Length: 264
Image (cartoon, rainbow, N blue to C red; front, side, top):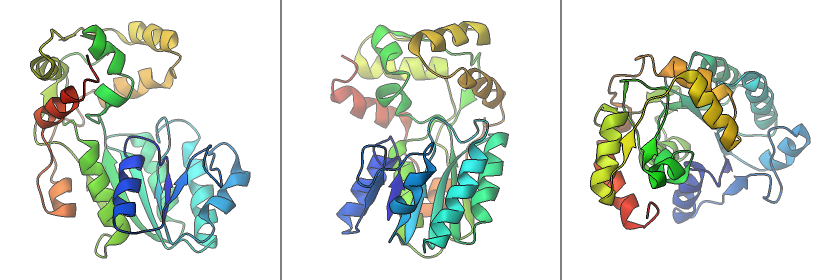
C-alpha cells in the first residue's frame, strides 16, 4: 500500500498501523525511494507501481487552488497502474475540497472519503506548537467552536478503509466528542501543562502578518476565515460508524502530549 505523506501527522500513524499488520507499505514522500512529489508528475508512476491501495493526502490543504487537478491526474495514474482502492483525506466544511473528492471518485477505483478538520495534533506537531510553548495562541477564530479530532482516530479510520471490506463508497465525517472554543482549548492545555496558556483572537490581517513571519502560506487566512464561520460547529458519528468506538477526547490527548515534555 502507498501512503502519501507517510511522514506527516496522519500518514506516519497509518504507516505504523499497516506495518504492524504485516502489510508492505511504501511511504510517499520526496525523500523516499522511489520519491513522490506532488509537484513533479514524473515521480508518480514509480510510486504507484505494484500498489493495490493508496492513502491520498495533500499538504498544506486539499482546498487550495489547483489541487483538484493534481488529484484527478494522480488518481488516473494510480488506477491505470492497477491501484484498486483509494482513501482520500479531505476537509470537513471545505467547499474547495469537494472538487478533489469528485476527481478521485471519478477515477474508477474503490474509494472512501475521510473528512475532518482541526487536528488535536496541530498543537504539538504543527503550526500551534510554538504558540503553545510561548503561552499565547492567536488565530482569527473569534468565539467559534470546533469539533477537534485526534490524528489517532483518523489513522484508525483510514487503516480500516484501506484494509477492510465494507467501506467502499463511504464518506466519513470525523469529529471529536466535544465542541471546543479556542478559549476552551487554552484552558485544557493550561490544565495539562500546569502553565498559563491563553487564546488571543486576531483579525485576518493580523493573522496574515503572523503567517508571513513564520513563512506559511497566506491561503490559510482565507481558509480559516471560511471554515470558522460555524459550518463545522456540530458533532458527527463518523469515527463510531467506521470503527465501532467513540472518538478520543481532547483532554486525553492533551494529558498524553504534555507527558512527553513537548510543551516544556
